[in-house]
Image 1 (tube, rainbow, N blue to C red):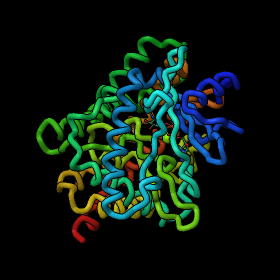
Image 2: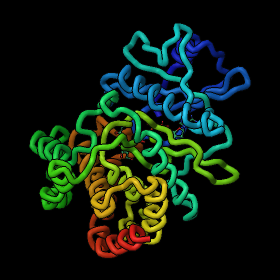
Image 3: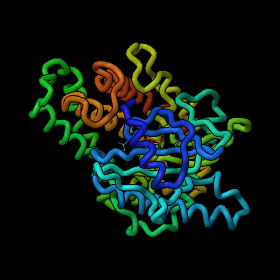
Image 4: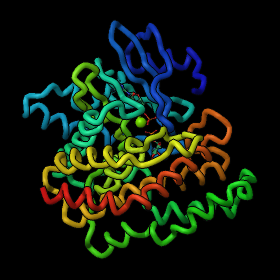
Length: 365
Ligand code: ADP
Ligand code: GN1
Ligand code: MG
């Protein structure tokens, strides 16, 4: 975690009109810098938005304000506690939902959703089911949100053919002089060039609709009630954009149905847990409330392979670029992450018939 001086925290806090008693690094996100702030006997989440990744933070915040307002209104009309079902952004003393510091950084403050946890690993199948249901419901809550009003906060975010081309460029540029040390990984990606186009082609053929999607559906982007285990709040809304439902499904499988953690170095531990795949698929299909088309259902296993391959290619690209995008915590961290994703892709390819059979069975229920 990067160092931020106490003077900077003080200046930022003054803009949000809070007096912090303590500020500590928090969570395991790869992109933003997150801090838990205790002030005035309340807790908050303070985040420095990564301006290298999010070039237009005001557009990110506009999306977040709109999406949370939309979800909040629905929660209120359903008699739910709005402070628990979605993020609550605290305005600055000037009435803005974020603070632009003089050094060009964007800071935002959220209410801390108390009595919750954001797990790094699936502890029990029921949690994973709840997570799936919550991401499915999230799509439903936003199904009537006008897609055209959302900014594309990261262009081409889940455009896998574009990610592939980006990897090819990184190999050619070889900025960190590492290309020759990762030839097997480069080979692995290149052998899947055509597969990368599957979803874009289905969309172009009118078979796969664009929906409002979350686009970063990792388990640790959901807050669970620490007593009941219920999934209460979908967080990390920076990448809510138009996208494919199967990718929201797929990214959760990539992260949560892996028998190992995302950066596991012992690749013999990496595999797709088909029971967890079934559990998640069941929850997601139910959470989407019958709204997924026949083609979307059919492409759910492809979504899982696509997000895993794409994420692996993104980690490899960053390794080749010299680790400028994802936060790393050790040498070759992005390469370890890439290898783990590619090992999972290979296992998913072996298990594709089983994944298809599970979806067929669930869809016919
Ligand atoms: P990143 O984009 O870096 O992943 P997140 O927005 O996901 O950042 O936040 C990182 C972590 O901080 C989350 O995984 C979760 O543990 C915690 N967190 C974020 N927002 C809240 C909140 N409002 N209440 C409680 N915990 C939160
Ligand atoms: C990043 O922000 P975080 O840690 O939830 C990344 C995702 C990747 C993920 C891999 C904006 O998510 O796309 O899938 O790391 N977010 C962004 O763990 O690039
Ligand atoms: Mg996150």
